[in-house]
Length: 215
Image 1 (cartoon, rainbow, N blue to C red):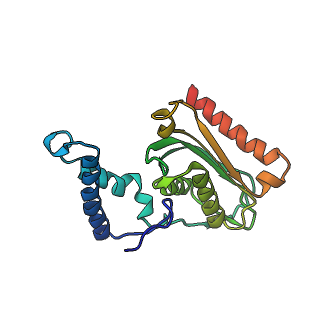
Image 2: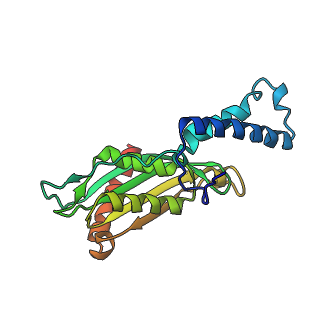
Image 3: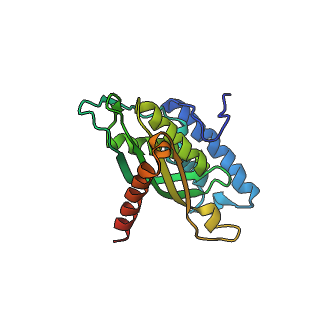
């Protein structure tokens, strides 16, 4: 049986294969619940929990592991726009690969197309973020995966920036139970090489978007 070497990897499965995964995972999750001393079969609220959990994981929580990459059509930059393209507050839901607890927040992504490069639709940035988030993840790696994919599809770009801010249930529900927010950022091209101007502009856009959320 082929296995994912890394939890945040990708192993596309057909609908039939996914259903088989759900069936097998439900059996093992039932054993997990029994190991925790739950008589789940005798509890009306838990009797079907193993199947529900397996179905939720495969069809939603970690569906990115089992789906092909989103179809991204890149267009010629016919107007030769070479300013920043930035999309803020992309809602993000992922799963901590350490404790399998959710972390949620927002992604802010930007790229600077070259006059002869490619551009993509804004909805595609949302799809890219969601595809990589829907799998067991470490936020640092998620930030880099999103960056590298955008860098690849936006051919001949002059820079890509990705920032993620999220709250982790593995922090708020265990250990010292703090309610902190984690921020990660990964940048390339003009965001690193053009002094502080492109990077400052990106963070200004992020701050403006965050302030609007508070209104």
